[in-house]
Length: 480
Image 1 (tube, rainbow, N blue to C red):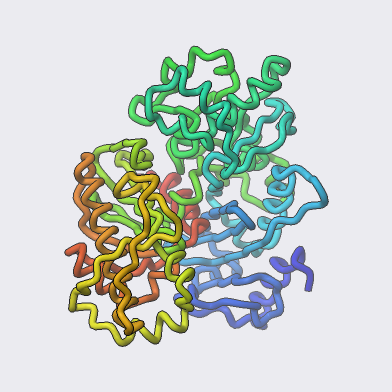
Image 2: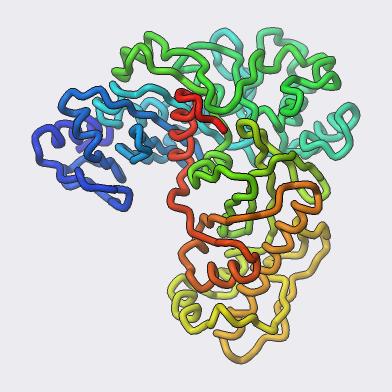
């Protein structure tokens, strides 16, 4: 079957009984559905089966637009995943990125089972932070090449530093504001209809038709003040201020009902709301369902990244620490350059890590004191751009060597949480773990000993799942 027909085939198979994906909890089912639908995972649970028979259960759809592809996850009222589709971006030649995203948005929604779309109460979208689109405010056609999340504009950063507060997050060359200033310096004076959009804003427009609306989280690197909930005076008085979003909403709060065009195209209910989105990293945090002050998520990927709920915001550009507003609380965090990238560079394959880790006693501290880095330089929890990695002395035993590395990374994580508390954040109370390192039980145990708080693998880590929960919370007024 073709990908475009997957959603319809899957729904038909459910109704006929040919599809057997009616199991609970269903979140671990992967691969091609037995009914033949070409979706990575399209799991419909007992609650969704009722919808297929005409019941009135509601679903909430989260759309995640990442760096290489997009994903749609729908959940029911009980937070169970009822559908999950993942697609790569496709494009021809030099086609604008935003048009590739728009095509992917269309394909994602069409591949969701029709009954899930028809029962959707809300949809929300997350996108990569600082990905910037300059578009005509009436047509939303881009008037300048899309600037992706990892594009830096150092010349614009020098201009931003002339009017922004010292060490503000917008002074980073990759910030959304630097990308806006880059446009303004090159072409902005000649186009009075141009406006700035984040990736999530621009895509959401095609579902609700309300222009110039964004969310607290995406707007942070554009200069929005989440404490006072306004564009600060130092920004509002700039010549390009008319290009800023007109409305900035709390993530998850409803923007508008779906447009008539979207309703007809995707079979959505006319009462379905499009909600304000967030960034992909915050959506992944929301997926872990942290709710209390001091609950955190550590992502153990190629680096070690920390996000934690705090009752007070903290910011220190020196350490790369800043705070996002999340409901009535704050999401604080930072990232260290240590992490899985070091293990990979040393030849520790997943199989080798599993074999050696099983021979480590996590209750016993390693006497080895390392600072594992792939390249020189560290920003958090210490700020030293010239810091050299330290992996000596190296014992003859690979088990002892790995033990020393995992112990040292756990120490760095402890120092990171201590640094956040030193800056004024809430003390850590519980840590959920995402990324490849979350499956290493030995490492989890070492970290728990070091941190002195419970350390658990996250039940869910997908950003699209977090965005679906965000849409649900917004509609049910459950944003904490």
